[in-house]
Image (cartoon, rainbow, N blue to C red):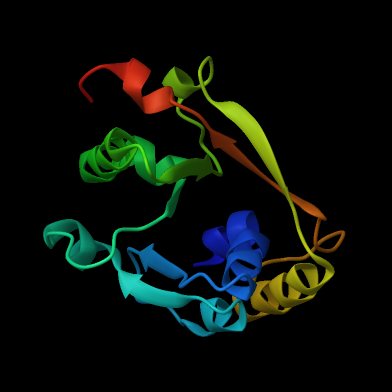
Length: 152
């Protein structure tokens, strides 16, 4: 929970304020309050990976790089999203998978003033140290990177 708030909290907030239905799939059943502060809803990652997609498909998918590297099912989900061609796919965080370096372009997301304020509040709720405060930009990587990896 803390990692998604730290790396993508402002992006989540800005998407929610733009009218998106923001759902965060998380492997832990931690306190959902940080996500609620950002206007997002928590859902269980295991249930989502085990269930077939029904209803509306996501328009955007942002995945923790560490989870992408560690879980075959998450990699498959990312590949399937890219194969459909209509889903914006980004990755964020550490450790960054080395095989993605040459083909994934960095994409900054400049946080709105409100996103910075709400992210700071969510970071406090998630017990994330603020250090120098909430940065004005979050970094993601986006591209056709997964298609170049062959069969993952």
